[in-house]
Amino acid sequence: MIRFLIPVPLLLAGCTVGPDYAGPRPVASAERAGATFRRADPAQTVADRPLARWWEAMADPRLNALVERGLAASPDVAIAEARVRKARAAAREQRANRSPSISATGTAIIADLPAGSLALPSQGEQDDRIKAEFYNVGLDASWEIDLFGGRRRAAEAASAQADAAHANVADAQVRLSAEIADNYVTLRELQQRLVLSRQSSELLARSLALLEQRERRGASSRDDVVRLRTELNRTQGGLLPLEGQIAVTLDQLALLTGDEPGAHDATLSSSGAIPSVPASVAIGDPEAMLRRRPDVRAAERQLAAATAQIGVDVARQFPSVSIMGIIGLGGPNIGDVVDTDNVSSLLLPRINWSFLDFGRNRARVEQSRAGRDEAEAQYRKSVLAALSDAETSLSRFGNLRATLLSSYRSAEGARQSSRFADQRFERGAAPLTSSIDAERAALTADISAVEAQGQFVRAFVGLHKALGLGWEGSKDR
Image 1 (cartoon, one colour):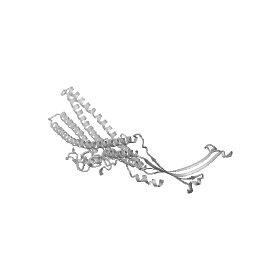
Image 2: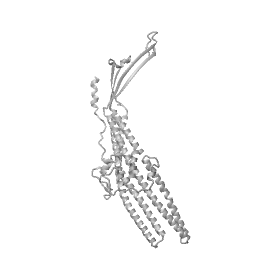
Image 3: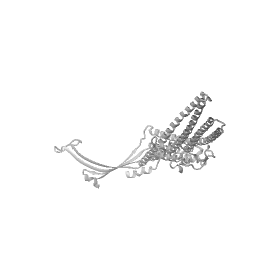
Image 4: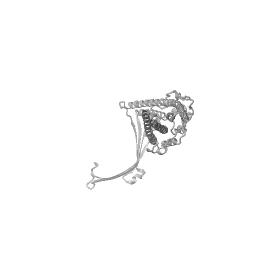
C-alpha cells in the first residue's frame, strides 16, 4: 500500500506557497531610461559611461598604488569578503536541505551480564551469566518532502542574502577607494599649505628683523615691533597643527591600506602636488547609477530575501511529510554483516501537522510580511538617498570649481601686486618691508587657492563615490 502512496506527495511537491518575487516597484522617475541628472553642468560633465577605476584619471601613480594596496589588503574588504563566503555556504546548506539525508551506521554489541540483570529468568545454576553478541551495519535515509515549497523559499532567501553580501563587498570597495583618495588629497593639501606657511613665516621674520633695525635707529616705534613679533609667534604656532594633521593623515592612509602606522612615511612625507582633475567628467545617467550602486543592489537583494521568507513561514502552517528508511545487515556472528540473507529493511512515512497552535504560525507570517514591508521601505530610502547623494555631489562639484577659479584669480592678482612691489623696491621707490608684505599677501592668497583646490578635488572624489564607482565589475554595469 505504501508503494502507491509515495508518488502522491512527490506530485504535490511542485506547490510553492508565498508570494513570488517580481522585483521592486519603481521609486522615482529617474529610474526610467533616458533620465538625466538635474544638477549636472554640461560644461563640466558628459553623459558617457563613467570610469570604474576613476582614480586613474587623476594621473597620480602614488595614489594609484595606494588604492590598489587598499583594495588588496584592507581589513574592511576582508571582513566583507568573509561574510560573502559565510552567506554562500549558508545558501548551499539550504539547497542541500531539500535533498535526502543518508548516513551509515555500524554496531557491535558484546554482552557478558549477570543472569537476571535484564529481567530474564535464570536457566539453571550453571547459567548464572548471560553472554550475547550482535553485529550490524546499515544505511539510514530520511527525507522531508518539500510539499509546500518552504525549503525552496528558504533556499531563495539564502541565495538573495548571499547576493546582498556580495553587494556589500562592492560597497566596501567603493567607500575604501574614495576614503584613500580623499585622505591622499588632504595630505597633499596640508603639505603644500605647510610649505607656503613656512615661507610666510620666514618673510615675517625678515620683516621683524628690519623693523627692529629701524626701532634701534629711532625710525619705528616699540609697539610696531611687539605687534609684528606677536604675529610671527602666531604664524609659527600655526605650523604645529599642520604638522600634526599630516601625521594623522599618514596614519589614516596606513590604516586604510591595511598597514601599520608609519608605513607610508618614507614615501609620502615629502611634499607633493595635489592630484589633477580632468576638464570633463563622465557621469552616465541616473538609471545606470542606480543599477550600479552597491548599497541599492544590497537593499534590493534584502527585499528579495524578505519576500521569500514569507513563503517559508506560510509553509509552516501546512502539514509536513517525511520518509525514513533503514536497511541493515547483521546477526549474532560477525560474518552475518556480509550475508545478504540477513537483510532487514524498514520504511516509515510520517505526517506532522501543528493545526492547533493558538495563532503562532499566523503571527510568524505577519512578522515576515512586516519584514518584507520594512525591506521595501528600506529599498525606497536607498534609491532616494542615492539620487540625492549624486545630485548634491554634482552641485557641490560645480560650485567648488567656480570657487577654485575665483581663488586662482585672487592669487594671480596678489602675485602681480607682489611683482609690482618688487619692481618699486628695486627702483628705490618703496622700502623692502613693502615688498615683503606684498609677498606675504601673495602667499596668503596661494594658501587660500591650495585650500580651494583641495576642496574641489575632494568633491571630485565624492562625486565618484556617489555614482557608486570603484568596485570590481562596476565597469560592466
